[in-house]
Length: 151
Length: 254
Image 1 (cartoon, rainbow over the protein chains, first blue to last red):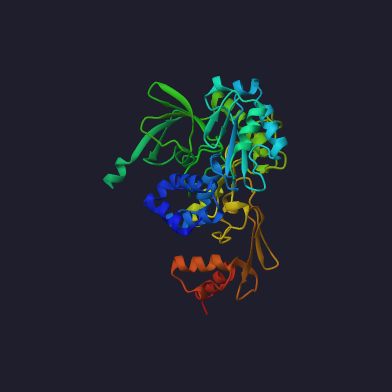
Image 2: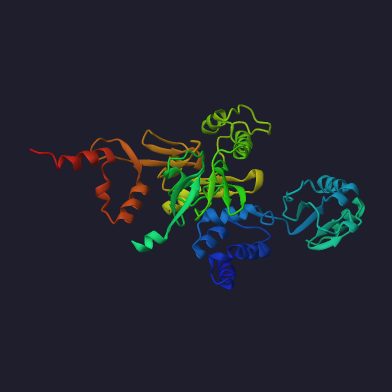
């Protein structure tokens, strides 16, 4: 991440240590992950110990300290989705793309994630691909959707 | 003086009247009065955290009584405190079983558990673990002003560590964390001219005492101390023992 870009994020939160969480969310939003240099920059910029920044970054599962793919596929593993075969969707991605939950393909194209219910149980089994909800999925539909992803 | 008096509160411990100052933790006040309350994560020098849950007491305020950790409970006027009631001991035993599962390799935990007659835990133990995640090392590091340590992760994977689980640039190797660690899981080893704190992935060279030649403190730590105390670094060229000896010599009668 460019330093200028980081500075503008810090400035948008007024360099306030109390807005560390929001600052990290913005970086995660821009980059899809939290690069090490960015965290060091944030710590110095907000005058917050790096240990605190690291603690916060590792506490929330929505933050990632590893590069994530350009596209993120989140599969719901809640009870309703589970009984309707969410596990088969995960296995499909594992087979086709060689990545398990929490992992990213080597070409940084796709990240697979699982979540324990998104509250859309009537749609299950369900996957969220780049923020878009797709319900009543079969392995074929999921495969088609993932293939259609650009770049 | 009058002000000070206003800050004094009176409360009862097992019928005995005790005094405390406003803002003081119940545990400090209890110990000051000679009552024995077990705890692992409490230290006077830093803020209470209520992590080990061992300092449980029964507190009665008005007509309601409840179990609470005394380390982070402020003393108040008119409290009635009971120490080792059946209820307190029952809960403390559960806490000890949990601690015994969390850190079975910690002797302090095993000893304390044995005092309550607990040798085994019904919970799934983490073998080899000797840290109870009380965060005292983190709190003391913050108090020292270094802030090299913090918690990482959450839930079962929460643990005290340095950023990225590697040598911290902030750590000066002062060893305060090891001093306060209740289970002794943070170990400082001074050997062959180096100070090693394996848990924090630290290995720094020791400054040698000008008089006895023994390595006694990491250079970064001495520089920091000299800066804080506004002292010339030369004042810290001797180890504490030799410094004391030199100082005492000035007072010796001829």
